[in-house]
Image (cartoon, rainbow, N blue to C red; front, top):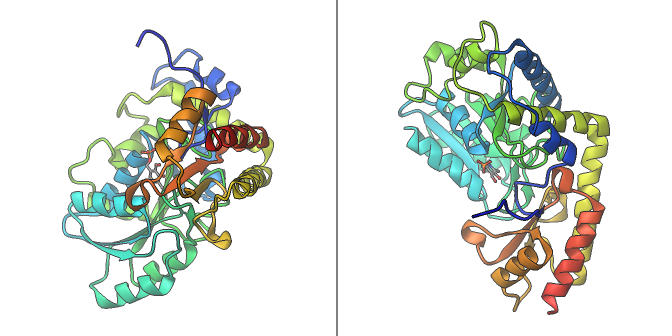
Length: 368
Ligand SMILES: Cc1ncc(COP(=O)(O)O)c(C=O)c1O
């Protein structure tokens, strides 16, 4: 490639388009990873992430890496070889948590739900009643493969009844819909910044309660995963600020700017903007005979999974949207490959102008 790629409007499942101010912040000169001003910035980012996650936990940090780094780090730090882990899954990313926990040596049990629906708490309870007590129960808040929002507080309550920790995937919810880590009694959660938080990919916000962090340290976990060891990382993020790895300073700048934008807008306003953009998108798509997969009560406003109308060439339309209109939307994954589109209304892209632009482009491509 002899040039940088063309600008795109990113309305797929992520990454999502980023504001000019966030991009400008990212292009500032980097400073060193032990510079006192970097730690001031990091404190600001951590305070902002606590507000987004609605938690008071000290260990709320922007891990280096994308959402998968967050997933891997959280599981590696609380699961040892042979530990029982129960994953509630009704989609691709729930299945991924299960696969990853298995690779890390856990004995994994999956409570499966139908793709496109939420999973009943009773299904989790039935599983927990049957087997030996798990160390960890995990579930996805916003399932990006189906566009379904799953209530997490009831899962956390049942997990705790059985003495397990509860881990939440908040990759497609944080910054786009309300999350309440402390209020829902969630022990560990991870996310990613490139969706509703409004920053470019590269950081995975993670939060762990003080008590759970202490219990991880006492168990000496993780045994084998040096890069994501929360104890080592904690000694970098907090005093004595010991070198661990070269953190991506410019991604910190971008996240700091994105958090500033979010608080300037106000979280309630931000959530409303996501909902308004999604509602307008769904209303427009209905005029083309395109319907959402998830029932209204559990439909995500951040990721709109919609059934492909009969006779439409999935790849052709998506390729034309990209090449003729500069707009990216996503196709289905896993079981829903070729059956749905996944259209993001996330972060900076969750905007009426963008929705109108996409609907106009889609109209051209559908009736071409
Ligand atoms: C629900 C969910 N979890 C985890 C991930 C993995 O995040 P990443 O692709 O940033 O590594 C994604 C990515 O789309 C996701 O949607």
